[in-house]
Length: 426
Ligand SMILES: Cc1cc2nc3c(=O)[nH]c(=O)nc-3n(C[C@H](O)[C@H](O)[C@H](O)COP(=O)(O)OP(=O)(O)OC[C@H]3O[C@@H](n4cnc5c(N)ncnc54)[C@H](O)[C@@H]3O)c2cc1C
Ligand code: SF4
Ligand code: SF4
Image (cartoon, rainbow, N blue to C red; front, side):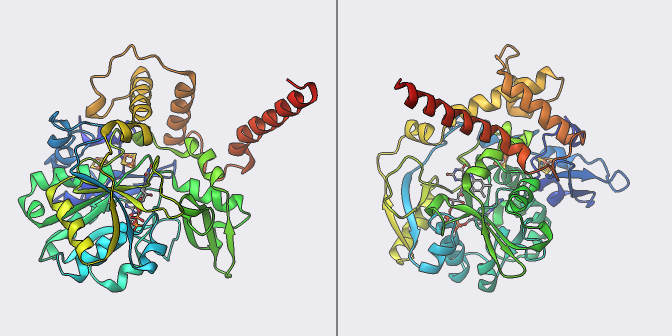
């Protein structure tokens, strides 16, 4: 399979690794008709060295992912924790408990690393965050909370040679898969990566999803000065999307609206991705689903490697995080709380639906059995996603009422049913 096959079969996750390692700078990351980012090869610059295909995780998943020694769904872990930043600003600014933010701060302040490859807010375009090598504490305030949209983090690997010392990386599963491939191929990159901090990830959404949420609040996209997918100030840790406008007003959208439109704006690549819990990171972080955490929402942290566990212990000793070990977490708990069985089923069914339509699949699904039973909604959503990816339908300016209509109808049916039951006392 070539990189062109990945692109034409809509399998590119937009991780940016190919663009980050291409020796001829022939690959750039470009917007797609459905509001994502994908790799684009300039044939006039390409020297057909095939390095891009070698490191693309959709063609060659990292060896460690496929070697059978790790559970593909939960991975291995040494210890599990509920962690919050001790610094109240970091806790407030963080998406969950501000743990990742505190790690980034500690690594830079203690000079354990010279730079952290991470995602920051983009004041020039608040709906399109950007990747950055964070080198100075002055940039920490711009560190993004969870942005459920594409960021081609690894395209900045091309600048790693400008950093003298060690580095850390914070990223999603697809980012870390590409990073590990690049590190396996280039000893210079491998030598520099001291820590890989992974975020759990169910999916990203098209940029049009954020624009939709903005429009649904009656705000013009060009008037947005700040956007949060989940603002903790409203409804706690799993808060509502918040929009700030250039004229100084704040608007909120109910989180249920973000959830209601998710399926419409999910890329095919995410539907085929198995690694929700970022199993190849040194430390993986997510929301504490299924756990009793009281009023606070700490970050749920899995220390996967000895280096990851040592880092957490160091930060506890220095009183940077309040951390509680959660000793009885098993792979079965994680599977249940993070719905990993459903996710695997999602990969298999969407993979089968694409295969049935004659599309290629990423390596980890290529041996899919053709007799998987395909639910109707999977066929419908696959067809829709393909139409959007191929530009036959454009959701950029979809009227706000259309995606919300099914939810409104089922709500009305529910109200009607309850009223009928009440009237007839059934
Ligand atoms: C796209 C996405 C999907 C997620 N899905 C889930 C999920 O399904 N279940 C779950 O339990 N947790 C999920 N998370 C993780 C969760 O939202 C928190 O990020 C995690 O709990 C860490 O919280 P924190 O307060 O410690 O992080 P913070 O201290 O707020 O740090 C957040 C870190 O995330 C990075 N980041 C933000 N957006 C992106 C992005 N698009 N790509 C790469 N890095 C990014 C920032 O650079 C920063 O380093 C997801 C996160 C993202 C970004
Ligand atoms: S390396 Fe990443 S960005 Fe490049 S084609 Fe593969 S998935 Fe897409
Ligand atoms: S679901 Fe997988 S492919 Fe999609 S953004 Fe998350 S880690 Fe990447």
